[in-house]
Length: 399
Length: 123
Image (cartoon, rainbow over all chains, first blue to last red; front, side, top):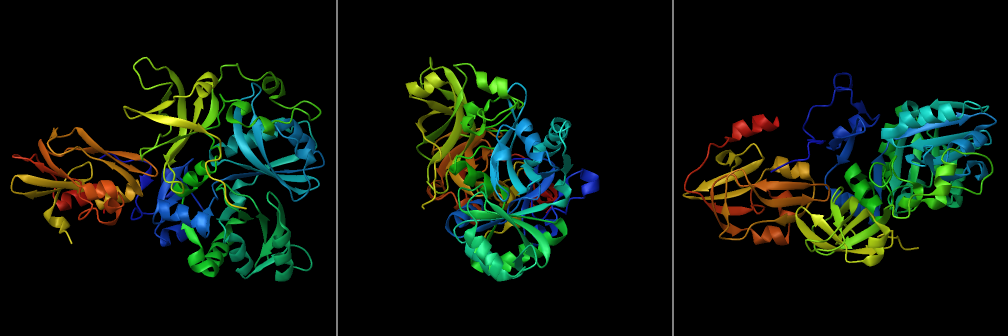
């Protein structure tokens, strides 16, 4: 049978970063000891799964899952005009967010195409942290440097100095509260203050904490469709923090790889760069028109092109469901019928048999007239399978 | 417990158990591990003539799709319905309950020994 060449077995020798140019997470040794299988992701050797994709997926929906996301890029802006620089550089109005707030945003090209999607944290009056996809981190850092050139701010790519651990799922909060060693940054620095800060932490907010005296940015953000936390910490302290959460959580914490992260975000209808987002896609096509702040004052890159918008017949992102178990997958073609005269009207960007829902789900770019016309079919390796257009997300957590 | 050293193998990570002129085939633990959780198996029905090296079925995991090749020339006598109903058997017991097809094969092509196959996968 054929195999995806991207996956290496757990028994494979540890990658030699100097020989292969593959980058290793600061948690690499921890993952190997835990028996992870690895995949190459944007030049990084990252865990694709520890035991079972499905078990990891279900754990995040029912208890909690722990992810290593240290491959993500973190670019920091420091200086009095950081907010103004980001208002010019990005699609959103970042000057409007408060200290401790996070915002989803986009880095656009002049033609309105999406260079990357980002989460921006305001960590101070004059400072922000921009979190970029691993594959785009260098490009984002370069673009931000260029775009911020006329502003009084310094742009630093701190990706190598920041590890990222995500704890996601309904038990994430309880486990985090029980994990010993946390405090809040500042003079008090005790666990009670930490517990109070967690209790008060709203979605898409973050606060500076400490773990065993070392700085950790604790954010209530994620990419799974569940409540959860993302912890930004120096690489040398990441293994201790990881181990403490694993030990505290016991059976409530399952180690999760990138395979489950992909099915989780797909169920939650969240776009992935390179699939639903790209240089040839305008935000509005991907359902992200609201991310572009046309009401904000001043010029920003991509304003004119996004104001004009794409052609009327430009394909739009939709959710599709099918019956049975054969999932439409990325790059499969979408037709407006199952007959020989059916026209090619779109292409699948992501798809899988939804572990939570039990039927296939997919996202696809489809011509707007065909979306309205209905009768869509996906060509699944030679077989046309009827697909229904549904609103995103496919899965929404209770409460 | 299947004796893996008694099986023959292909470079496409399939195993072949010879019993007279009938062979039983499946995918190896190595292949099952690489695919991840298998959620769908498509197999040809009994009576289907198969040609060595051609695609006869599909094995789909949450993450990817693998094609099943016929390791021999012959005719399918049985497809494992248990695996179609419960694809996870391929993960839990790839050399046993997770078998895929029984094929009548009067002649066998050159296949790999257990040692040769393990050398191929580096395990």
